[in-house]
Length: 165
Image (cartoon, rainbow, N blue to C red; front, side, top):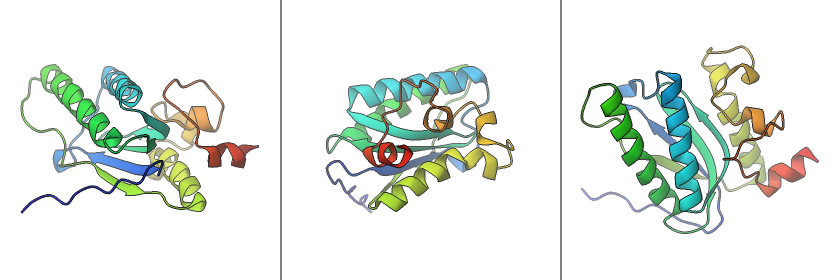
């Protein structure tokens, strides 16, 4: 059965999720988190994907981003997958698939939903009982968006900018 085509709407934010195969860990050491961050940063810059919020959990990741072009998300995710899976397989002496399947991307079509996605993504470690406060989790955009700490990956969405003024 052929895959369903992905829907692209110009300048429409998307909530992107990708999980580890069988919900197995995809990140275990600090170096894993750092390398995945670098992969996302480079892919977003190369493929014109404005990242507004992100979180890396042990077995999945969430990204809120706005693509500039019809191939921005797919090209960025393909680049991340190719580089990170190769790194992970080499680092952990394994082979084969790392991801559960294709990434999922849901259009974020209202301002209310956009702000809810920011919160959902950045509070994920708290809901998972990994930390008590979101600032206690190092691998998310919370520090940039809530605490105004520099994060070269983040491009605040205009709705978010208007909200914090």
